[in-house]
Image 1 (cartoon, helix red, strand yellow):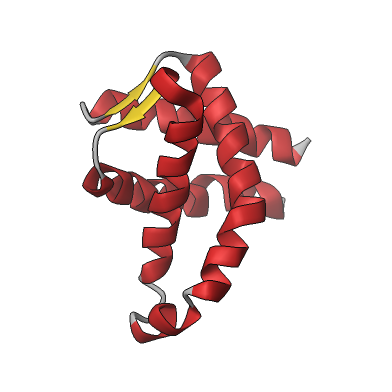
Image 2: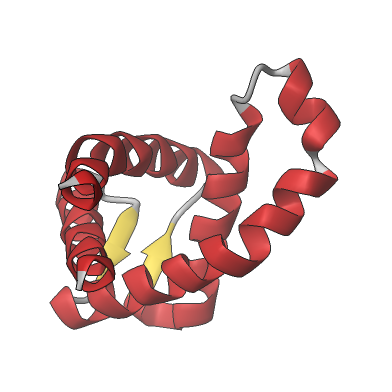
Length: 114
């Protein structure tokens, strides 16, 4: 149940980002929910592999390279969804990854603790 609540909160954060940035476009709540699901699967499968492969640069940047990995998984999600989810550039994806990480820290992690 918590995973489903986290998925819906992630979808709402993605919709908020699409309202804030013109280079970050979602076609609706259904697309945001599917994007949140795909992003969740990619974060569970692809992100750990990328984190291990880029461990030296992650250590050198004191963990800041993890935002780059998050931006790459976000862009991969947009690529998989096609025209329903569009990110115009890497800069927008990086900014979105930082904002998503902040929202997950503030919203989703306290939900998991209770």
